[in-house]
Amino acid sequence: MPQSLPPIAVYRRIAIGLLVTVGVVFVAVLYITLVHAEVTVTLKKQTFPLTHRFQVTAGATGHPANTGNAPTTIPGNITVVDRSSSRDVASTTLQYTEGKATGSVRITNRYSRAQPLIPTTRLLSKEGVLFRTTAHVLVPAGGSVDVSVEADQPGQLGDIGPSTFIIPGLWAGIQDKITGSSGKPMSGGKRPVVSLNDENRKEIEKQVGEQERIAVEREHTGTPSEGNIRIAVVGSVHSTPTVVNEKTVRLNISTRVVVIEFNPAPLEEPLRSAVGKALPSTVVFGGVDASRPFDYTLESLTGNTKSAQLSVRAYAWGVVSPDQLPLSKEQLLGRSAADVKQIAQTFEEIESVQVKLSPFWLRSIPKRADRVELKVVSPTE
Image (cartoon, rainbow, N blue to C red; front, side, top):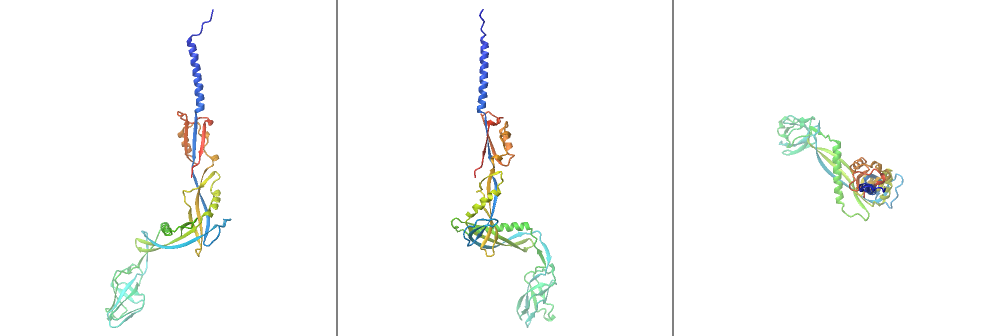
């Protein structure tokens, strides 16, 4: 008896099973083929200072190489400009000391004979304060002379206003005929002592010095010789305080600005040599940071102003060496893009991280390292 064939439903189930198996295999192959993560790490630019001492000498010839600790010598021109200015500073910390008040008294002679007065002649004010003359004078008959005076005793008592005076040393009969008067107050009995904060004073000197440097730089507007540069640097700043009144101190400031013209080409080689000392072994040199201008400082100036020693400060930039990168593929596997960026923020050598996942529905980095591409990008200058 012939066998009966399986029902059609059985074949249908077999067909569906094959299709599902093929679909799963297809999806698996598609996943393996398409699933991919690209992580781009942009390295952070790190700057490092470079310094070098050199000397500009008027009349020097050639560019001797920098050997040992001897500075590179460059021929150039040096001009010294001395400028004076003043700055009034509010003062609330004045102290006082006693001195002898001083001023001027006009002696008027209404007597018939000239009257000589020797130094230290006593003059008694209407307030009862005794002063003494400081010079020899001859007061003509019918005339007047001005004489400088100072209080007999130190102290604020001598700080009187305009007043009249008698001369006790004269014969009583002519004391009303030879008298004195002052048109201005006496001062100096109570003398303020300047008390300035050194930090504030230095800051003011620094500000004024920079203002004077800029002013001198603007005055020297001629075009330097071909290949040369011209710099103006502050050589020195000194201030002397004087008291204007009880609330104001005037700083009289002397500033020396040195204008130097030279060709900076000889500095290129020693600055390049300084890179090796400035950059750590883990950093790859990128170049000189062009965004930061060279900064020149005057170290010393010879007495004849024919030679100036300067230091130049420049900046090199570099990035961490790729083999020293603190971020690896293994740290990223299975993580989301947000997690990767958060991890990257913990490393100062990394500027930013970009994560691209494929296909579009992928939500995290694959867990297989061969499905992850890690790109390292250095910044451009």
